[in-house]
Image (cartoon, rainbow, N blue to C red; front, side, top):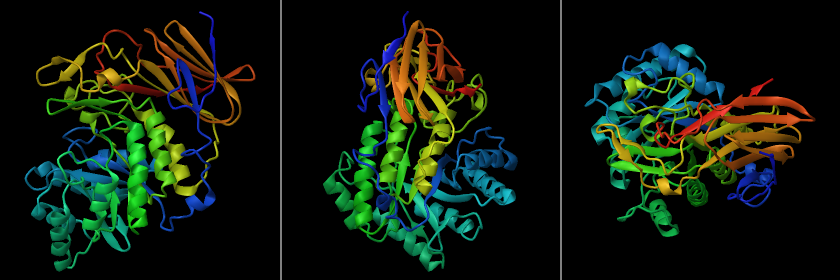
Length: 451
């Protein structure tokens, strides 16, 4: 088939074989003054599910150290330790001690703080108090930081008072849902949250379970409101969301890395002080960015969550945005080419319940796009080639960051970057696209090699 010459477009919904260039942010140039709004040092954290370390239930201090080193190599400053229990499920307590020990042993300044996930007051107090003076505990204005997933103003005020009475005051940056039956973030509910929680040091918007563009829009709106109120804002950045559980069976399209990039841009545009990548290792909801081995190593914890595909390109592509977020430096130093695709058309059912092996579709599957996506970072103009099965696409691109997409076809997926007739980057997707949806609606990512 004759290659198709693809045109460059700035639309986020480019048709057939589209490309997205991002010299602009939020429809305007991001000025140096916008970057200078925040005086506090910027930091990037990753939401860490303490229940589910990469190597399984027999995790060691050395295993946690390896995960910390991987995170730091990409510019991540710390883990936010999600704990859905503390003493009632002893593994949380045990793993918490090991990960603090690992950070201390490394001596690299990696920071840790907790995210209380539905914990009762007494367990939250015990958790924070035990590590209150640990040198790797992240502090804001001299006090250890605590975040949450959920909670409310009554619980939060009781927590802060109890810790203050113990001589252990904290900086509190929770994620609280708006009140009301649908818990939706609107102008009115955001203002209500601010009015009822003036005692907090800042606010974290968890994001994750939603369309990427909508998360980015809400992150900007929520962040602006809390910043106007004089509070710190921690913005979310999520790679992809696909939860396959009876009580949480839903999927949201991210268009490869494009949706994650939009959330990075929202965090930068709103001058958030911190970003939290949601998540490092939530295998059950496919929001992970951790690299757990070669693409063939798709089973974790003896297949407890089904086959897991590599998401490491989501993290690798984020290094550019991490540097931009922290320093304002948007320079591209090396050509990079990353790809992202699902392994089957969205019309093909997959396993949606591991406990029963039920076959079907998660909510939202109809909105998934049968396309292959690529994100490219170019130091100079170049051509990017995508071969999806028997379809061929060529994109002529200027220097800069571009998010590309093309309709996919069954078969191998191949990618290359060519400049002045010379192939500089080349790579193949680890698995072909077929009618067999064994990956259960998850994304596969990969990165081209320099030749």
